[in-house]
Length: 253
Image (cartoon, rainbow, N blue to C red):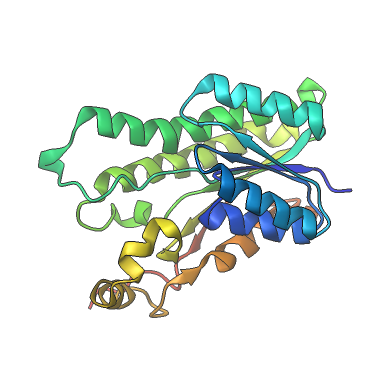
């Protein structure tokens, strides 16, 4: 059996799609969720129906103790993790720079950046060969927003994802000799519950799709498939890559 994959934000959107793809490929999955237990349990059931063990664990990645306890539970009930998908995140909503609120920014960075870093810390404690582990793979879900500073009103979100990109490259370099490979994938506009307000509104959808080279939103499955591929040993000599999954990139014309 393949090694356990921990997926933060595993009950919805891209995280749920990753969980299903991972289960279909034979990976046991541990789905971390913050509040929507029913969605997480539904995805867990889908993963088990695909033939792979799965566990749903309530854990807020903004809370250090939650992260530690979640990994302890995974270790006790499923075995040592060999994969981590840092997917949990917020976009923070559109906020003009002149209207920034400190508490709002701190919450955004606590989840998008600190959550990614602290979950990675716990994964390293399990996976690092220097700590008795067997190595593993970490994939961080970033965003194409990091490449352009975000669309208007989303500079705070873009900045948090740019931090994830930088952390990915640094972590890959530091962890290579511990048998841990680290990647990031940068989705563009993707159909999830997080973006529903945009893609369900015809005018907004059309405006966004005009800026995408392929002229359309991605589906969550189109992001999940390459994420799960990165877990494979076929990528054994790749690490530190930040992969654009933005439909060919942004077009401004």
